[in-house]
Amino acid sequence: MNEVLDAVEPCVTTAMNESLLLPYTPKEVAIALKQMHQYKSPGPDASKSIANRIKPFLNSPIPPSQSAFVPGRLIIDNVLIAYELNHFLAHKHWGKVGHVSLKLDVSKAYDTLDWFFLESVLSRIGFHHKVVSLIMLCVKSVTYSFLFNGAQFGYMKLGRSPGQEDPLSPYLYLFYAEAFSKLICRMQDAGKLQGIAVFRQAPRITHLLFADDTLIFCQATRRLVFVSKMC
Image (spheres, one colour):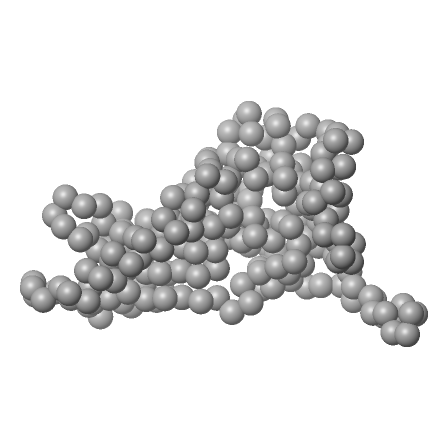
């Protein structure tokens, strides 16, 4: 885990932290409440306010390889890049070295976030400790009870992320995946992983992220495929 965290670089500025630390206004709370679906059961309202405040700052810490949930980015952009790369692989009949694309699908990704690792990534990215504490409070304090015939039964506290239905979950997973993305970039910089370039002057693409789905592109050698699996 330390190797992954070492690859993450601070990118949250002082100005961002100052904005995130401002007291929440009645207007922000009202907006969060109005964004709740009127026909669904009440959800974690506070985390919606936090998510709304974090959302405008996602472009800085989240790299272009991730196209989901980031304002101003379209997931179709990465879809088109992936299509062109796979088209290149399907029609490449020259050269001594082949290439391969690997699709990683994290099962129940939003429900399996490790709290300690998530907190470490948020701190490593540069979020103020008060911001990190507030986020982790929302994550760790979620509890569930069960309604049966109109009566409330039981009390269950989660041991992992509150799940995909929580407004914060998609953004927290972006930071979670950011550590993985940085590790791949470090492997590429060290020459341990080589991406795909569709022509000589084109940039080498090592990976693309679509929320919890990841595509990895590398040369089809035993060593490089082993390294990509280690990532």
